Amino acid sequence: MNNTDPTISERHIQILALVAEGMTNAQIGAELHLSRHTVNTHLKDFYRRFGANDRAHAVLLAMRAGVLR
Image (cartoon, rainbow, N blue to C red):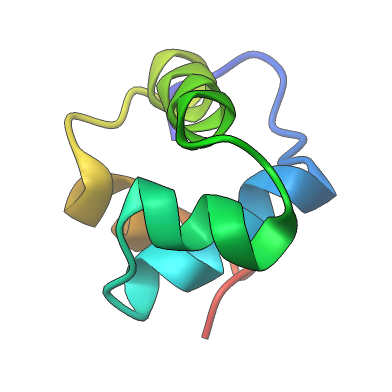
């Protein structure tokens, strides 16, 4: 990951795990009691911090970092 701060937050991990399950932002929001906009904000933050291009790339980066299986 091309980031100077390699810390992946627990919320990022929760969201990315549900993305990996194929859930939409609205479904993730319902599962975690967040709005879909908040989920989107967390994903955008992850993309920006870790250089992800899209949802699939974000999941791949999290898997490579060892935080998702």
